[in-house]
Image (cartoon, rainbow over all chains, first blue to last red; front, side):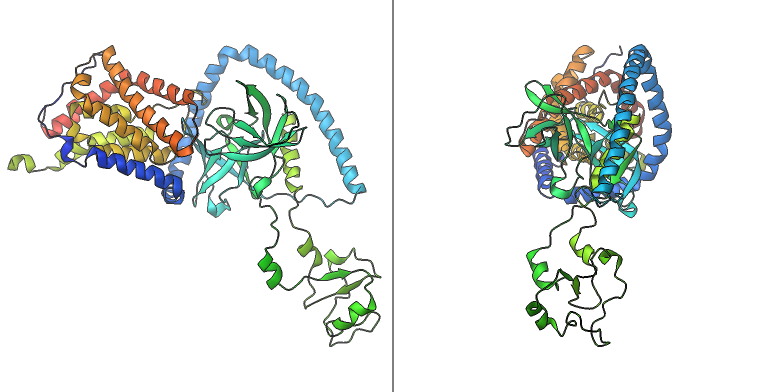
Length: 374
Length: 175
């Protein structure tokens, strides 16, 4: 080994003439406190820096990923036999579950038809490439090559074909940062199946995030499945997260997703329907009312707004479309529709939110199926 | 004295080389690549030039330069701001305080000396994170990163010494 010893250069100036150490330490502590209290200052700087560096990061990611794959492949050579056996076993298991999933999917569709259930609309999502990764003791993040100009917003859920990875915590114009589920700052509400017990998935920079259970008394066992609950309206419900494991007397979650193995991820544009505020309810005119066979007394005061039941429509009265709007098509002919103001409002848009709580289940089931098919 | 104050561009460049090298180390370890599939963390490479120049020429690695390097590490790594800035300054304080002792060490003892500086940085960062988040972060990732950093020292320190001798010292006319 090369001899490592350093000759001190004496009398060549001193750091004491510079900004004193104590001042620098105070500055560093102020930055730390400010970063905790007002993170946006540093987040903006970080976003700008990442935007600036993202083209270069994208360029170098390609060749570096090839080297990564090569090194990873070389490492896997030593355990190729074990991997092969394990994959064959998993494949057999997955084929069995694939058949079950297909059968259940068909049955679910039949039930939905029978119940005339509102179909789940497709959730809009954006696919982005991972151009950076930080796996440090106090932070676990990814950098993606999509930003606000691609519709990425802070808080959106990020997942790959295995399950939930994390959520966007910083969105620049061209790049964004993902806080992983295992990061110290990460808190995601979850549900444990089959007990339906609620919990908070709390990252501590370990590999498996901690599971902080609610006050319920339903038992939770190792091997139980953990999915997102959708509470808080940030992460869609029913996204697969992982399975419960027990480590040192604590319940943790072994995550399905592995960001180290992902190249592309999907970002879900989800926002839970919000109830109208009290102010909105007071200020906004009431939506169209669907009244089923109202009593005559209730109709009389509204004569100026609409004709009496059975009266012919005059040109002066607010128009009620002869052909009902698609959303009103299910209203039976013998019901009376009152329009409080023109143009006739679309009833269903004010009553049924565009995205129901069950919407992400479609995404979740798709994700699950993709995983099982693999 | 007047001659000493005259600053040629080469001399100015040489004066900034230690800080630039520390910043380069920060950029290098935060490149979006992991050759170990995420099993092994990247080393805190910037601590090596900081430790070296605080021992050899503290006027070229003042506390303000250490602070800037730490802030760069915090910004690029995506972690909470101020954490590694404080950690690097802790390493600076320990190294500067026992400068003569550390500089007298050689071979394995020199590596252990550097390990002490890494320990100071890691302890300060860990303490600050625990205080800020009011919970104990797991120690094992930090310990692993510290071990990897110390393991890199015998490889990187001779390169830093070479740069000091042939670029910084030569341009400044010191050696």
